[in-house]
Image (cartoon, rainbow, N blue to C red; front, side, top):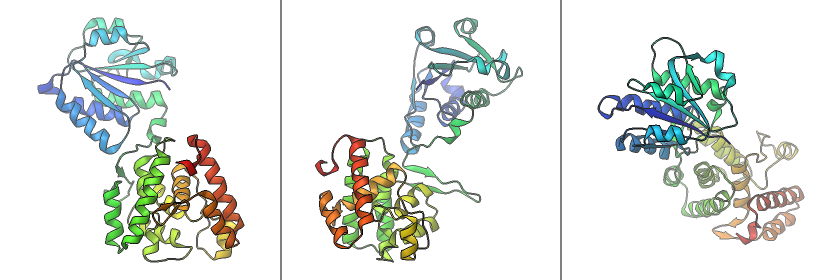
Length: 338
């Protein structure tokens, strides 16, 4: 996949700190991979890299780079945002999408040679305007709005809300505190921790969303605090949804029972919901990790299959076997050996 880098040119640490920080934040939020700042500014590096470490993504910032050498050596498309360029609507379709791109965003007066060093001089409008707004509009047009669908795998998760702020912290400590606050006993806590440890081993080998995976694994049996029946997954999902947790976490909890419960079986069991088959990679990992952890002890696939066979739950046997094979193929080794 092609990279998008932003070169912040002419940054003045005493005057431009706030605006340059906003250039970095817009670049990160709108799909860029990195910001290069021509002037050394360790404070901006620390601020933005700290935001990335908390809210997620692989975005980075580095400063103190020789801008002329960087432009000259850059192997890709070079774009300069300037009010004196060609209007974006007339040129955006000419910019290649299959090559790395460097977008130059000026601060103080940009040297004239920059205009000649780039492939495209692009104007968002031929009127004075904010470089922050210009960068946001350019990246949105370049990505066609797809950048707005990106998910950031950080420990801080903003849950969209119509009436206020809802930010959840996806850490093991926060999830364990939630379990304890609802009255979870040590036996349940220890099992959940063991499931999380095993789930993370799998997740690290297959590009899973690790903060989401860990929290889903810790909270997968939260419903058992109130309901120790087959519907405990639904009960847990209801608890988390009522607390404003996002649906991707709620669904891990809801769909973890057995190897998943199909619509026919859910109706036969009288369950209030029927969408109970694991779909995402995180849902599948937690589901199978729970199957292979008995108490706090790792067991083999045949052990859990024998358990379900004795109960006459042949559908569950096949679903668990499928999950085991699917995840083993995904990580390149048998889960029994992990």
